[in-house]
Length: 344
Ligand code: AQP
Image (cartoon, rainbow, N blue to C red; front, side):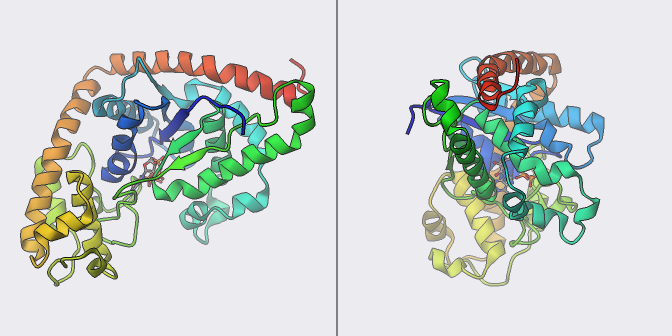
């Protein structure tokens, strides 16, 4: 295995308002990684346009995600906060990877199949091809690790497949150019802790999602205290009291989801939450969860609003991020072009 700089890339797409799943499954996890890796946190706006986006909302959503990174405590001087479309190397490598990935691999992507259902013909080519662009987002920086929610695990496997096929197909060329045996790393996912998959408040079998039409199913990061309390109060549950042990949550998806959200917000194991609330009904648990959610999310929302009041400052962070991203990505893309045989 070649020596690669331990580097993180992860991104969030501005396809709607940020929610609790994005926070617990992604943003909050990013913060401690800054101590051990060189990190690049992206707003992946080119992924957002795989489905229709209103231009004004896209712009606001892009700034909101950057504001969330900054509000959560990502240091944009030591690390990089950037926006995908401002670094054209992503798109260029994305095309090359579209020619490396096989149709069979792409057709097996469950997220795509879930999204299009029986209606594939009406969806964009970009939506189908998006995992190849995601592989480019990661590999244009030769990122070694990617923190993601469980839903992205399959796309990470595809990224490894693309890297492996590129290294293999061009093995002789890499040798000829003295570029070693492995040009791209086989990137590892970092998936850990509770609430790697936060579910809808209205259906414990569906992921909480930006594009969910029912607002009551999703806690948005910018929700005020009243909205958070109302949504938790109206969350779907069952009539049973909470169990005292985690296995008692099997076959109770909505109860499991609320307990896992509590555990993640309190940064405690699920067992500790059940030791406190086991035997109690949702009448007692829901207000405690609402208080905890408000207490945890309010400072984050306040800080995000502060950044959003100074959009020029966010844009300056993104411009600086784009410049520093390009300094890493450009030589990688130049090497790729040489390896392939493009004339420069
Ligand atoms: N419900 C979730 N639970 C835990 N983690 C989640 N993530 C998203 N939803 C949950 C994580 O957030 C990061 C950014 O995701 P994304 O915006 O790039 O794409 P997504 O996963 O498709 O997010 P949405 O909210 O479901 O968007 P739409 O509805 O537009 O498709 C990723 O690390 C993801 O795992």
